[in-house]
Length: 510
Image 1 (cartoon, one colour):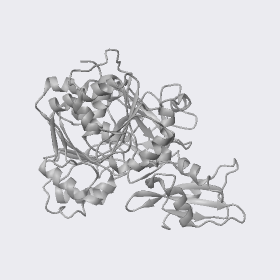
Image 2 (cartoon, helix red, strand yellow; image 1 turned 180 degrees about the horizontal axis):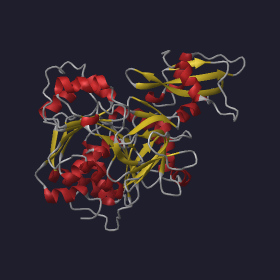
Image 3 (cartoon, helix red, strand yellow; image 1 turned 60 degrees about the horizontal axis):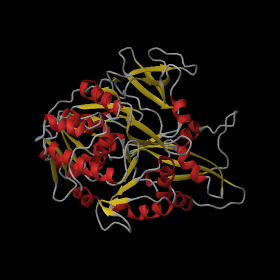
Image 4 (cartoon, one colour; image 1 turned 45 degrees about the vertical axis):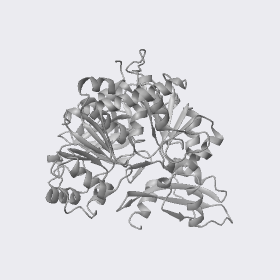
């Protein structure tokens, strides 16, 4: 057993323990660690027979399901790089990703076959389909897996710094970046996670998409390393989630505030028994105090709020349940092996109650951005601190608070949205002279986008037309919900668009 062969190691310790429940399958899959390792060995053998080895990227575009983990663990055995794609992206956006990550194989689910058909006309590679009839030249994933031998597969040259996965994060220049998740990063994130009260016998229900750092690395991989059970679903369904929380005696659950709000309006909210839950974790945006109070009063839930980033862990901060109301709005204190500081514009460390940029340092940082040395070098300063782009402060007790975002990013329904990616598309419309995209408060999604646009003289363009134009080129969650046509945008003396003035102008006018 070598670094990265997670399932073989866990099978050695607890072969017959229930490892995974895939509740998105009909009938459901229930796999022990022995079952899971056998599947991973089979798939690794088949991938190896196709010429895939250390450092090769293997992509998957699929709804949540156990096959994501089949692929991750098989790649880890080979030293290959698991590359999960955001299925919310438009196929043209995926093509850009393919062109710089150069995957050698693609796995997809039937929901996305039309996009895949377009994709492979522009980028040829072998493809496997998970369900349905697939498309021309694709093979059925389960058939090729079962056809392969289950002999053990390892990569003797694999080292801790070798890359296990690429996780995509929005680009401030219009192109998503691929954070390199090393086996070293996985190990340190697991240590940071288990220090915060994860045990060998926890049951975790995952509702995060598996292309997201939350789906793979917040609890799923730490659960494998610690020998717990992970329950998967195909897509977030509030009633199903509540049913599974009760039926599977789930002890740990994580979601974003939008999901927690939706659970309270499910038809089985009043009747469901959530007493097995030791705690719930919330991230992505501050959890409203009334929602915390509702869960506490009606279901006895203890909340841990947190803050994470794709590039760092992802677990960075945690707010203990007893502080959920006393320190409302705080992201908590740094995880054990995370050094967090606040710096001014001169990169000098600041003290309590002073606002500045949040910077981070520690062994759970990623290895940089794949095939992007400029962005990799720019992200970390000469002292080794990663610059988050978030404006923050901390108090005398060491609790941190996010004040603003130095970058333009906003969070909609738990997804990071980078205006530069949207603005790049808007400028492709020949009627547009200038544009800026901002995030505005929204009661359901936390924030939603608004495109502020100045048209060229004499040009005619409607809100409906521009939204449709964006929808044909962007993932749905990135498309702004509204457009404001303006005579001019506020510009600084240095010629920079003043987005804060736009946010102030439109805040509360939704």
